[in-house]
Amino acid sequence: MKFLCDVHIPYNLSKHLQELGHESIHVNFILDKWHTKDSKIAEFADQNDCILISKDIDFKNSHLLKNSPRKLIRIELGNIPNKKLLELFTSYIKKMEAIQTRESFFITINHTNIQII
Image 1 (cartoon, rainbow, N blue to C red):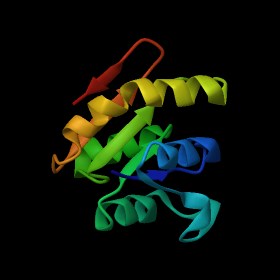
Image 2 (image 1 turned 90 degrees about the vertical axis):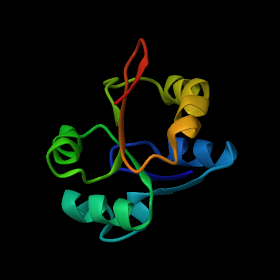
Image 3 (image 1 turned 90 degrees about the horizontal axis):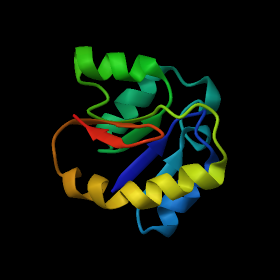
């Protein structure tokens, strides 16, 4: 799988996903870095078949209204320790891998579960 981590996602998650055997890049290393507009981030994710990971509700709205980004993981955890975030992704990665070939999906991760739409 290929992941694109939005600006407010810790670099450690991107590194952790690489350690789990997946491609991952943080938006702060591409495009206009932290100045990149959401529409350009979504466009990049779609063009490169990346799963966008974000906390930003604007991406949820864009996905539901325009189907862009096509593949989205929205983190609804507030501020949690990075270690806990990495643990959650480790525990849910198999569920993510199971749907990676879908053309489009929306995943939410909160403190109690993962929801795939």
